[in-house]
Image (cartoon, rainbow, N blue to C red; front, side, top):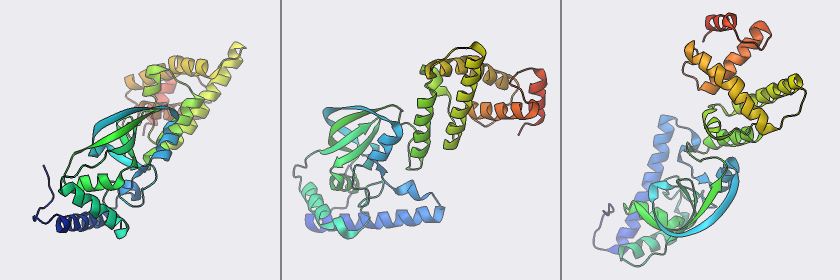
Length: 282
């Protein structure tokens, strides 16, 4: 359904479409400021930063698809001209924007846009104005030539630019601690710096293990054994002792491992340790 107003004069309607889109962009910025939301809440996600944070693997062209407008979250190189909802951020794009809106209102053929697909997210290579006009006219989908990009990490959970920091640190953590399968998905923290601390912790655990066994273990072997012999048993004990609280399991593990060593300067686990930790629960 076309949500744009129609006066019967396509050129005037196209001009009104642009002014309405600009007004909505300004009002959105004002609303974000009044709600004191983060600065990146209304900014387009930059494709290069997203792929760098997730780790590039490969790409393939999959051709023409109909994609939801709501899945388009970023751009390859035009982030400054439009906001996250592809509303114009200035009058700089007005002439071309109104020309496309006029063509759309007249029912003329509009070529498909070009996008990269990362997971369920799309990033515009060419066609920013067409996306903006489609939004303004109340459309929900758009034709697109799609190139799919595969990454090391799943982009799920990315909403704003600040989320890329967490993904980037997680990618580095998984390079240091290459967990397999289910283990990879279950070890999650919310503060990106915790990935660095956890990586150091696992490496130290692996070093002690190699000293005890008198042989070298590569990173995948250390990661697997840490998860099976240390992480899982500790997390299970924390569940039984009701010590996880509102943390993630990995955050609870990091807290308890740090407290364990600080309290008794050892790496053993027994009832005395659990009781001491319970008394210091936070």
